[in-house]
Amino acid sequence: MKTVVDPDLCTGCELCVDTCPDVFEMEDDIAVVKVDQVPDGLEDDIREAVDACPAEAISVEG
Image 1: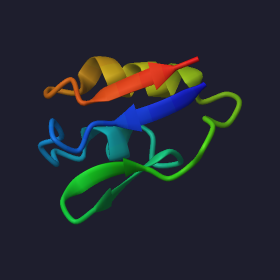
Image 2: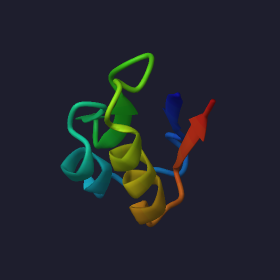
Image 3: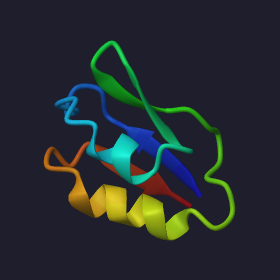
């Protein structure tokens, strides 16, 4: 599973970082994904971050 944040849509609310800090971090007020592949066991946290994102800036591939 790979996660992507669209920097044009991200509002910098940090909700994804709060939900899954092992995968997301803030860089210049925009959320970025800090891993190439989502570590095992964090799939539910990623789905929660996707669902919670108010800007719908997070997508999942694979």
